[in-house]
Length: 399
Image (cartoon, rainbow, N blue to C red; front, side, top):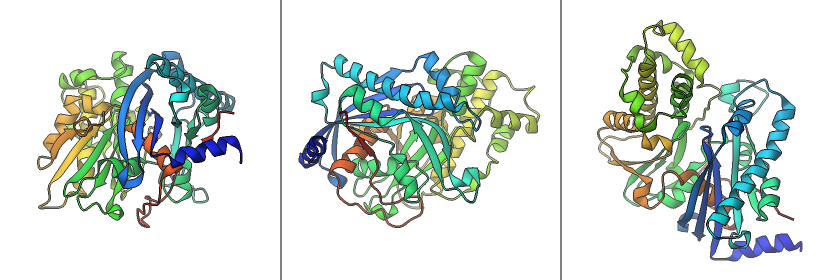
């Protein structure tokens, strides 16, 4: 047997694995690096976060990614070069984090690398009958493995698509194993660039579990905060708090067919981008009357309403629900306050209250996916469209 396959086989037999989960979302603020100790697998998964760091992307790196990000027409040589370069950069970021934590590659069993999404194209979005759902993440796993010297699992989303899903959100698989609790209906709300939630019923029935995107989280707020205020994001919602919401514009922004589609569904900045907002401004004829602060307040309300309305569709009368927040949006009190106002019958908390950092949650979830790919058993999520029962991740050896 190949010595590397032998090593992977031995890792799968261990009761515990040390896995570095990596996540960089559509906000492109940096690479989340989470070192997890994971015991067991499936519903018996037990995760502890031992180290976490967000390595910021430089302005130059963001600029290079934006040359291909969510664009139909690009320089394909640049995309090709980015795929290898980002893999190397992510690998180096992992190596640097390990050094900061006084660890070496030998202290880690696996790296779970999400990569950097550059285009997401579900069939409902591209509407080309002969083509399937599709998505593309760059940052090649072989480059991560060679740079770190650690077995790497990557490209998780392709198997989800191959089995009938849209490649996102993948949170359902990790959320069910980590966060399900008997007799408590939970909604795990992640507010990154795009917002999504996972529904975890208190009866623990995996056939009822699902996850879906709701629409924009921070992506439009961040884009216009950069454009109008030359800031990366609206820190603490201060800009939104200083403006007034234009409800006519909110209603126009909610006209996209995405919001009427059934769950589960996915979307991205390919749809919800500055051009989308500019078109709504023209239709509403409010562009000349809104201050920059008003626009940020309105976009924040747009995210809050679409999140709350999506959650309302799964809430059953007479039952109680707890919404656990994570992602960058959890730090925006204007956004979170509006969601709570719109969902008065729900109780709210953060995943930190469950022992999982809300900032690290997505990176941790990919570590769990890698653990399932290597050591997991079989957990059926039923035969529902968009929630395939599937193991995800491609293996890259360092040698």
